[in-house]
Length: 219
Figure 1 (cartoon, one colour):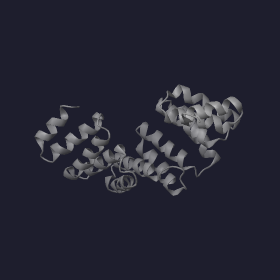
Figure 2 (cartoon, helix red, strand yellow):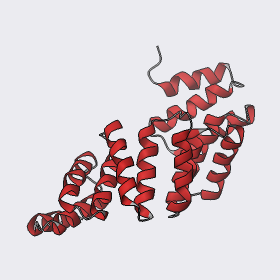
Figure 3 (cartoon, one colour):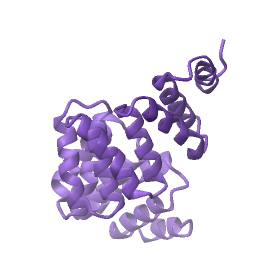
Figure 4 (cartoon, one colour):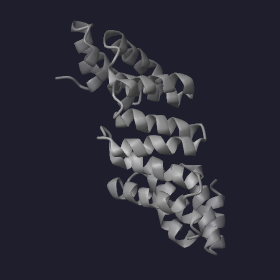
């Protein structure tokens, strides 16, 4: 028996070096095991050499490049995946996420809307979360909150969705309602200074000055 997915797919490649899916699966296993991106990238690149239209390899390679802030290279991979399948919800969501990283939420919104309309290969919670954040960022917190509410219902343990929901409530002038969302986000991601700062802001705007000061000491 194999101890890990990494050892399984490494051994598979040893015996089947021309299997694109094996290279792709090894890349995914490396990412999921927390190994450095530099180890996963060659596996996705080899999968694409063997199968240039492999959507999963394009999307995952693009995500690795996005995390490295190599935006143009990431966009090229996502667009190739989308060219092969215009209804590829993963690629649509990733293109939207890239625009959010570039602080262009208005450009991100159509990608997320198309991803929700497509048959997604990823959890819709992620797309609702991203679309909600983008809508809040362009000054549309009410519809943004609707999407963030759905994201939280679908995945209550996503700190980014909980934090986004709090931000939407703050933007709607409801700081007291935002506090529990930020508290949940902080419980899920206790080392996130941004969430702690948001919680302090909501507490301050709710008139809970001492509680806000306690959190600001941690930021």
